[in-house]
Image 1: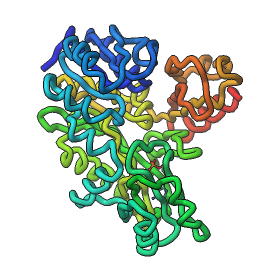
Image 2: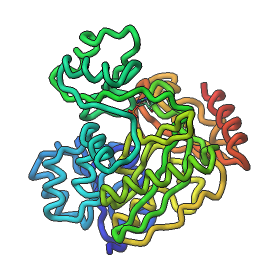
Image 3: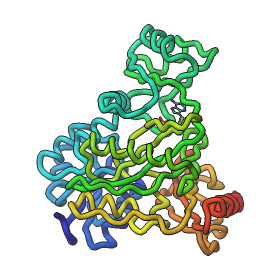
Image 4: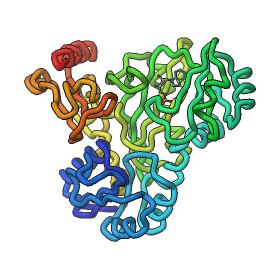
Length: 377
Ligand code: AMP
């Protein structure tokens, strides 16, 4: 068990690490960030120490490891050599195996299949001939996704009735790809939860996620779906957490189909954008749960106390790269909370921050959030 003032090491320097570091420091932990980003990254700004080096820089890793008691990661694309080096000397939670499995779509899908966890039909391909065979079986539309390092719809191509497979394959040439049957979903939901070192689990509620251009746009918490959907979603989350022997906060994104089935789309071995509302709307938020789980403590009560809607703030709403929008519509709102990630330059599609609006119902929160957002533009 790690109690304050123990030192939490975080691999990765983005906004998830930043929000985790804020929680940790609030409770008196020290925080050391290891990132391949330049100094002054979002997490580094609020940490005690920031180490900026490549993830395979053995000397820098040693410097990191001598300063920390326990290590977690805030994004999954950490090279395996780094995870191995960390796990050899310090507790790494979630484990190298859990991160290794979920950082790669092929391994993640094979894990789901092996565990009998519901997901879209898929095939792994590594050549045009295999793609053609897969599409013949899975049918059109379907979607090709790179096995490694894809996120927010990057490295994906939809195969429609008229798509030329040879043309589509060019972007994937030389790589492994997952070809997935198209799921005509009625909505997308996710479950964020945590699992402790002893295997106890606590999930936040099922939330609905609406995407724009493959990037999360709005989260409605709780999701307005039937009890049978909620039950399936929690069961899927638990099956994934147990299957990975997971420790920490984890998100599972899912599709809900018209005939009432829930399918796993993606696993995130870390806190997740769709769990940001928990900071303002839950007794224990997803970052506190991560901290508790990673430090070997008991999990907190994840209960949501107020309906909420979270809206992502992408660089697109910045009038220019360095000039932020006028925040008054959010900052003057009595039940809105603004979260900015400390990124100096805005670029289209870059996640710069988010805001959460609390209300008596989700519908009211959504209406109010949309008004606040349109006032920004
Ligand atoms: P991903 O990066 O796999 O989470 O995909 C990004 C988004 O693309 C998802 O949130 C869905 O909106 C959409 N998408 C991905 N895979 C499928 C699929 N098999 N069927 C339908 N929509 C999909």
